[in-house]
Length: 551
Image (cartoon, rainbow, N blue to C red):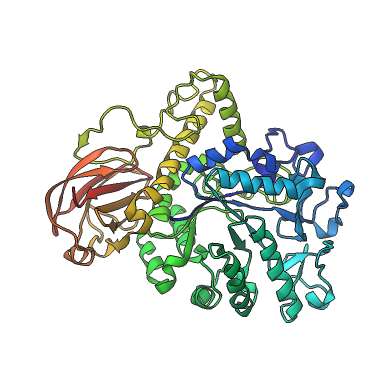
């Protein structure tokens, strides 16, 4: 199984308040709860093609909210960012943030129930592990941190003024951090996303990962590492399963979307990874990064589709999607602490407009079963009606995946709102299909990769500034993947060299029926060296052509 991870902040996910005040407290703006992840919500996530949920911000962390009734008074404003506080300023590693519980005194029980619900829906459970620092004031009573565990003066890194850096010169720190991992693994956690893993000695990881995996062999360790020259060190010595592919593929794709780099630069991303390639975690959004649909990148999530196709299809690495990304969340709200920065704040009590609206639509759908949108009860795209027709070219058209003109047509007279709702449904349908393909298609799940850019230089039929193409192959199928980052349509002719036939052991086919996996449309092609494949793409789109290699 190829991991497809859905990252979500419980504090924000279930908050349906559409009238949040910038910088407002929990009493004014509200706060999501673990209980919001009921069976229906989790099945919605699974319907996207997710295999795991990364619940961000679970451990008890510094906040300005007073929870004295469960022995957690408010922290000092000088040591808290925003009203809610940073999820990465943990003040008690053996408990859950009281904000997230319906009954704060029983919050560990509510956590355990969430683990059971997540597993019952067929999803893995991932949480954060923050090894580099704690909150500036740690209050946990079980295995408390003392001065021995910190650097003198309780220093912090950079602008993380709400934290205190842990001292790994103390063996006691190693033991305490190991025990934290074992505590949560024993409660059913399936993986840890290790915050700023590169700031902790590799020797610690080399020591702790084998110990934890000895008791929990299938546990995943995902490291936040931004130093490519150290990837091999963290994988081979540190024992990490996966590392962030941020400074490589992510940065390159975002630069292409902004018009700063040519699409051909994608080739350099995989070439520079070497043996670390299979261990990278691909993403286009997470809690640290600017939203794709924000004014700072694309302005519309639909324009990022070619980058998402590359991110999901380039190799068999795990894939991460940030909640709201599948709905084109723009992150252009002034939530409080950070202002309008194109990100969804992790420091405030607020709601996420795209998620909030999607939750409202689903509630309305339950009371209006006659809604005509072409999605099932879980919001997943249904197959297109009728038999796919053969065409002479293929289009990555979202109109084949959704029915956005009809979607909620009777629910509003406002044309702009209707368009936004249709686009969100279209985008979610695209994500559901693409993420499902990551495990449905053998070539995307485990197949080999072949970059075609070196035989497709600039020509009237191909422009490497805007177009990127590659192959994925597994037993029984070949995928030809082509994307168009330009806003204008493109009629392309893609060359497949003899080297690809030799390397992938491909047969030559005088006539093959290719199926575009995003839309279901078909295309007749010739699969032979020296015979270009014609592919027609709309602007900001792509195609995944499946060519069967055997009956």
